[in-house]
Length: 435
Ligand SMILES: *Cc1c(COP(=O)(O)O)cnc(C)c1O
Image 1 (cartoon, protein in one colour):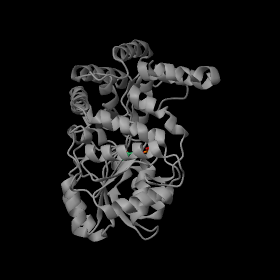
Image 2 (image 1 turned 45 degrees about the vertical axis):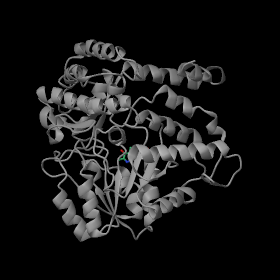
Image 3 (image 1 turned 60 degrees about the horizontal axis):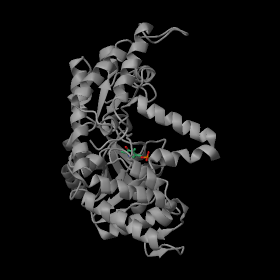
Image 4 (image 1 turned 90 degrees about the vertical axis):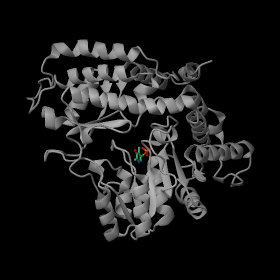
């Protein structure tokens, strides 16, 4: 029995949803997915999501539930918490947060009162997350944020961050990003937080799999609270984990998640987190994490060689930002749309040190990452081939204003052969492999 047989159970009950699931699977197989926050979860993770744990309610925590019948859910949640603690080296783990955004809000809510709390984090257009105090997120309206950014070399300046923290005196100092290609100096962040009396928090959503696999330094023991999504480089289900160092913090966080913000935990998701953590605690996963970084370096190198400007000059992790305005006079959005037409999926992204034309919905850059293609088994040589395909797409996109009704391609004739080459590369690889 394989995962397709589980999926096929949808067919008779709901042919419409089944049809879309089938089409999405075909898309994920035939296209090359370079969105750095996406991945392919293993069949075992997906099977756990489909398990009978979805049938159970259990508000509260193991041993302290509001419903009976918790013999297996208690054992399971305890096991998953222990695995999280072991893989990341922190003593306390909450595995109930429904996703990354509520996990971050749960941390702020654990320690701060609305309209009284001060938090310092990275600005959104330099790689921070919406939940790091964007005005369109409740985090930005409930708490007072001061944002730091990258310097003229597109990297964090720890001295400047320290100076800002000494002045602002945040209650929480946040590091960890959605679009930052360099290693995070957790020790320096931890020291600044200590110096100003703040709780240090690392949102390692993007790099959790790299940390688990030893391909990025760990926040332990420098950072007090660690949040992360489990569905990005960690390759688990869509959910989040919150780690903490000391028992008082852990207790406040548990209360903030439930009953503070959520009702019953999603036990099927927690079981799937457990499977992902078991997978992550293996030599095969450590090899995967190392390969993700090698592939990102190779892709960045392949693009640099072809004349692209990679922010900060390269990458230490799984992602890179490419400023396509500065080299090709194109907006990231036009490039991302054109790339989709040939089967390469990325996202447009704001970049630091942008032109004055950059807007959130029409930024100067694109963001590319290697977690998904690495799960398929691609290696460095395929990254150079991929850089060539990306270059064939981008160098065929027209710059400047395009009159209504006209194509954004310079030469329409090149599009189909390119799309065929992209598909051929993608279909050489399965969507999930431990090789
Ligand atoms: C993805 C991400 C989140 C949000 O996670 P969701 O599961 O989409 O809510 C939060 N912080 C960072 C840094 C992220 O990359």
